[in-house]
Length: 563
Ligand SMILES: [Zn+2]
Image (cartoon, rainbow, N blue to C red; front, side, top):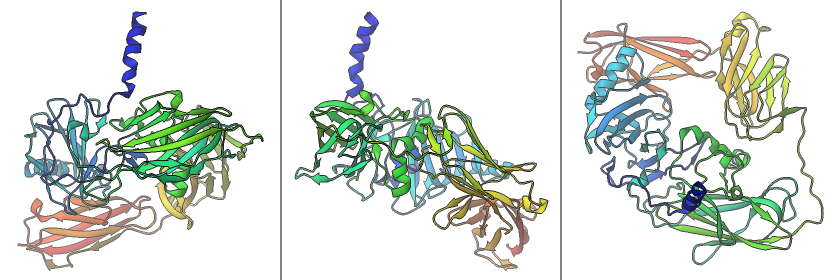
């Protein structure tokens, strides 16, 4: 009895004020010396993930000083071609870790540490976990320089704060202040009949509602007629004061006849759940129309950002009963946009029958599924999908038709081809491609070969085919010619490219000694820094070998002079 009482007393904190929090305030300083203007907010919706930090604009420049947000030690350094590019992790005595990504370079001490390991390993891509005493930093000291490395579409600093469990937390909750007096923008509102017997405006499909802005900045929609279980969806973004970027909002709440039935709060999430974004948004609509509708009901999305579970955000509309549904969208500074949706309960005269497409192949979401025809085999692990459904599956020659990429998936699945009908010479040139767009452009998915079985792992349904890559990579010097004197040069730049399966690896040497070349996939450029001092010779032999994903290889050799 006592336990139950405690539970009842604690439960109402579901709806506690957002900005009261237990995170240390003013512990973390700004990671940059310029005013903070964001091109991305925490947890905003990205491709296959929620954004795990804040993206700070760097005035279209690279090379700005990046400062340690607090005292601590460098606990991790990761350099990768894609993703975060050059990233730095600092762990602080209070248990939090700050992350700085897309850097152009590290501070001299850290840069030397990284380069030593890169030369030891003979690899640009590297991941290091320094000991607590190796690289100690003080709050406000320069730890790196901002850049555009990795999967970054323009110079900026990605800044993140993680707790001990490695869960990213909204940095604004730590008092990092961004000027914002502008309320969120509501682009569109949708209503979804849920299940076979529900209707909205005499239809059993998603309906877009007309939005009318009010004088006070709120919105009202047309009145809808509905019956049965329904749910809503909203397309919303937030703009802050000092930039035009459309960033993510901080919270979305919904109220039915004045009582709250939903609270979505973008304060914290875990990397394990980030792929569930595809279930949170209307994925089919996103993949076909490019618009991200955030669903205001929890259809088994497994997300911790859903803070209340009153009927999981669903509404049950009864005949002849009128209700008012209100949505409040807020940014971190509590600028609100309200949407009012009047609902009339009207039982439809006709029964609606959903036009479900049926195929001979059925996915039970809870079970593993193997589909096989001819030389092609597809394997889905259990719980790859959220729902049971009829899947399209057809094999014609070497083309696999596997529906459309409009179904959210939690896991990767594998595709295998038996290629024993090809000659050995051909087998070595084959890869599995996803056919993309109207022109069915073959995009490399994988080419793992075991005997005569070629397989790949991918996420997203679609059309796949065997493709052949017989084209070798190309290697082109950018800023030098053969036999040139390069005494005053700081960098050596080489462009590498591959049509077909794409570049798998590259290796550059000077006088047979490995040199560190930084690979930027966006400009397809390898860059060597002469300050690394690999050679003190006057005459130098440069050799670059580039291999594509099926093993086609090109060797480039040149000679340069320095003194
Ligand atoms: Zn970012």
